[in-house]
Image 1 (spheres, helix red, strand yellow):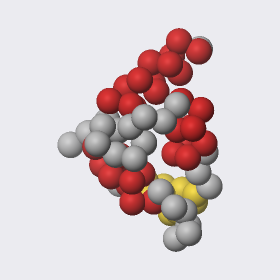
Image 2: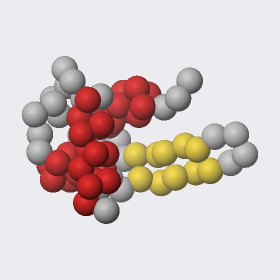
Image 3: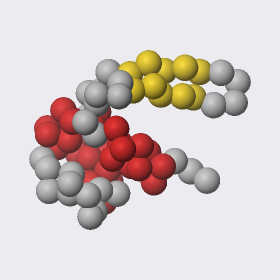
Length: 71
């Protein structure tokens, strides 16, 4: 499992080039990007994630998700 987590974070790091998160450690990335309180709304065609307006990395996380999403 830890090998999978390492691979996941290395892959994530490749998408974080030229961002403020480029040089952060895996634990810091987990704290700032993965451990996010949000409401998830699921319907037939899409999944929406509603984050608080006060979340400081909202724009950066949205850009990362757009880069990771297929199509």
